[in-house]
Amino acid sequence: MTAPRFFGYGSLVNLATHAYPDAQPATLTGWRRTWVHASARPVAFLSVEQHDSTIHGITAQVPGADWAALDAREHAYLRRDVSHLFDHDTAVYEADPDQTAPPSAQHPILLSYLDVVISGFQTLMGDAGPAHFFETTTGWGPILDDRANPAYPRAQPLTPAIRDTVDAALSGLSVAVQPAETALVDVLRRG
Image (cartoon, rainbow, N blue to C red; front, side, top):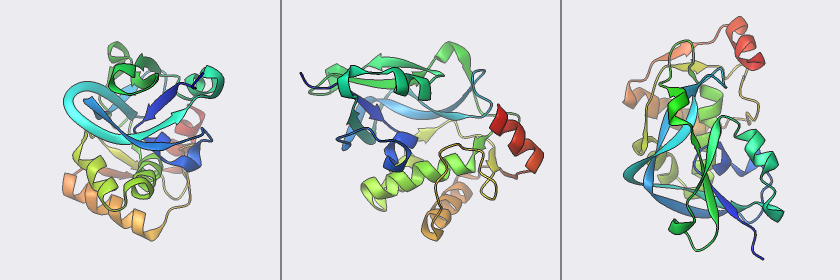
């Protein structure tokens, strides 16, 4: 029996953040990526919503169909069956639309999280990866610059190239980047 797969479109694209086997580039048609906030998390995070779009990402195996660890990692999400879009059993995680709101100053996007996502897309697709991510992601809100003291639990070392790519894209989007105060980062980390 073939193991089911998940479609990753954010931090799961960065293979340094997980050990799920047989990760392969993939596309998901009929969905788009969006930033949201939910009461189950103190900061904004990526989700997907049905839309007339196609997004790039990865699929990877869930050995033994043991979804428990991935469900725990994706605890603010609903697992959706999108097998009809692939040649195998595949799920995508979507934040519960009834429980989400846009990012805000009180629930910002962590820059350390965005850096991890963009690093994954750079590795997956080269220079086209980050460009695709920024072009196909909606719901941008305030960003908290926590690079000096990352609050994102899976933060990775940041290369100068990724830093420059992210900073240039955010400047082009005119997204507000707020400096982090240590106390705020600590609160978010405990969240």
